[in-house]
Length: 308
Image (cartoon, rainbow, N blue to C red; front, side):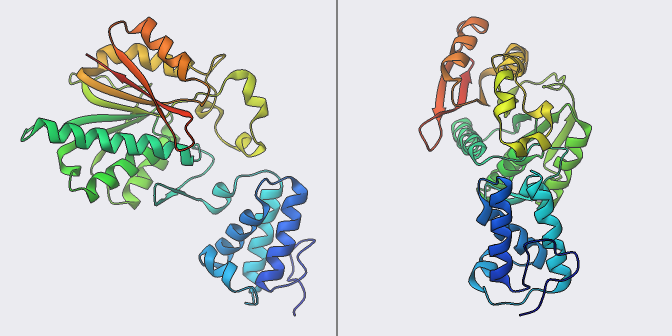
């Protein structure tokens, strides 16, 4: 067993995979990480340049000095609260790997429900319309890293339906759009998504049949109770005002001019906002229909708003 390489930091007493994992896990647990073992596995795998399963399966494998130093630096950043996704520069979402950094919100697993519903809605509409020359127009509002738009495009490509849609992705942040464009190119859909720097919806003469959005929905009084890692993420992508529906409400107000007759909007919401969003739609869009789609845990997750 070799001693710690220079720069490995306190607590890293070995250059064997298993020992580095043990020491790293202990350090992250002491720093308050909610998933210390998983974090250590991901960070060590990233430093070594292999998959997490290889790290777990080969506890006796030696780790080189450079990789050990990179791992130590990553542990230092994670101990300070920085999200693992930013340290690695990668977040898995809907079966795809997305580049992420502090310019964008880290994609959450619950948002995959929004993509699933979007794909199903597109396929339903394409099946109902038959042979039509005009593409089905849809927009991903507040695209951030591009996770929803890119995952949707990738899924439609697998279903041989990508050529039948026209996808627009918007964001108010130019920095976020740079990340989204990079992810679209990385997944070979850069030529299938149009990106627009705009507040919510782009000015357009043609209405959209489908609007998707994962807008900020955290209530102001809940911001301070979020996990420490969220302090590294853009506040613009999290804060939803006093009731969490400030930005979502602005988008709802824009739907009459943006959504085609018979069109559908799918808006991700907080687990405690199901009744609130239904009431908001009833007040601001009389005659429109709204319902709530649950996530896998049975919690309210996506508001479905339909124009008659």
